[in-house]
Image 1 (cartoon, rainbow, N blue to C red):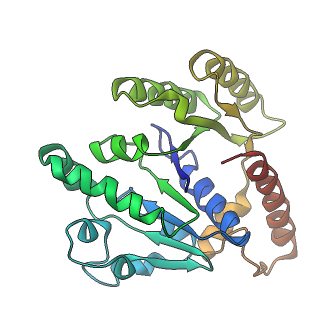
Image 2: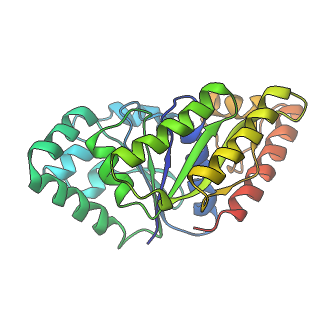
Length: 261
């Protein structure tokens, strides 16, 4: 089954949010999905109101599964119907083990391969930093969604990501879609950044599809504060915010439907 990753060598561009909502949307369509957080912050849990799961026990991390100290069911959090999340503890230590112990890399690849037998889709969320863990997980990904903020630093993040792929010998053709974020129709800077991004994509990743840009919406932050997904059936108390939630949900759903995974 497909392994989909969201990545960017720039933090704060919304890749965790985009990946989380994409996974939840696929789950609402009846697919069984797994999200693996390769980010020590495990922000994906808080998006779905499951932040407390991070401290439920001392051995509910991906590393303990790789070490053979627990079973998959011991570390999986059921965040929504058909949607499950796994968190990591210390990616620096894990990456060091993957670098120094060759057998650890094979164990990691086999573990992900085992997951593909039970899930329709596997989504992987990354930090902006690079590591051996990131290199391996990106290498085994079928599709990589490069999330790019529409500002000067965001464009730098795109170029830094491309350079990282080249330096790490990761196939650029795995980047199937470029997701521009932070768009505003009346602000000049995001519009100019989008034009520049399309030029860069045409030059460096011509096989990647630039999706409709994701608008900068405060309602997303409001939902995350409440631990609600845009694709939850629960409504917001404010009619104004609920109307905005539905608008953003429909915008994202249109983008998700255009992404062929």
